[in-house]
Image 1 (cartoon, chains in turn red, yellow):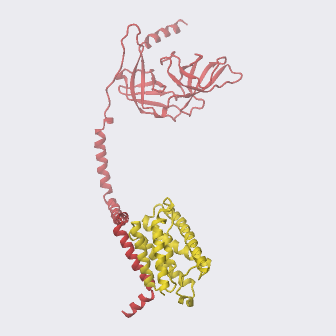
Image 2 (cartoon, chains in turn yellow, orange):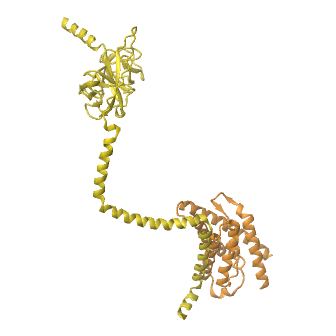
Image 3 (cartoon, chains in turn blue, red):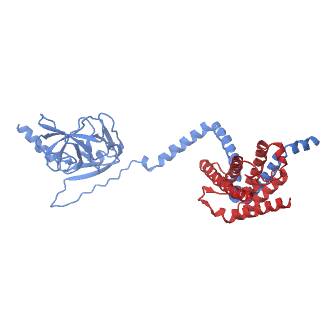
Length: 278
Length: 171
């Protein structure tokens, strides 16, 4: 006991400090609401973290079982989702007008498969022959043209995208009305760029001039495809290679419209007669 | 002896009143504030007993706390200051000087000693004060910055006061 007193009196400064500092901090925590809340909180944090750690390790033991349960539950829930049902509803708006006979009708379709970074790109949509889609119809979106229907099944159809080495679409310049064929290019890797070929050398091309469909092929005339990004004048050759910045963003396509041309057969049979005459 | 007592009492009163009515409203937003009332604790006689020093520090702190509505924070800071003061005195003053009952002002010590003394004591006071006040280590850089700036401000004020009084006393 005596030794304890000697010890305390030797370090009396420190003990006095501890005493008074302790009283002060006690007062701080008791009387100031913010510090009180913080002090309680930090002690709660420690306890809470300890519980959390223990629970984390406990969770490993039942991981397999709970994964299985979750997977089953997911499968059951997924079957209930609207997206797992095939949407058979179709709205085709056709206006009956005897003065202006409608030539084109549109079938809306949702893109369910898409690619932009292959050499030949295809899309799949959720509409097929049941809904009146036939091979060779044009496909557009709200932003511009998309491609041509390639294969049709009862419920689905595949579309040969504009980003395909074989796709050629008749397009014309908005101002000069000169027409050529639009292909993917100049190097077929950028889904934002296409090449307009076969425009004669004498045509004056402006930068940022709009490129639209010509109306000579599957597409109605005047659909905006994109704008001229490089005029591509080359000395010596008789045709221009015009770079076109596509209006359509192929990587984010969601809904497309398939164009039904009512007079397509009539036009085709007439044009085949021409060939027979040759 | 009575003179010493009266001098210290008068100093306490003036400094605490100045602190709570003048310096409380003086500062640069939250960042810089001055606490020159700690000068009263710094200028207590060298030979004061430890127990009395701690008690006085605690009471000073509590008094200021009452005006600041932060019960305990200034008390804790002042107690820390008292502790640092004892250690600082032990380290810098020889044993024979301990007998003097006078205040450790510029008149008794050198100017350089007083500058370091007030800065170190002020720094520890402000460290305790600001960390107890914020009670978190978030924004620690901001807290440290305001501690340093406030400490410089307080030290400048204390040295300034001491210089004024020192000159007068000399005359």
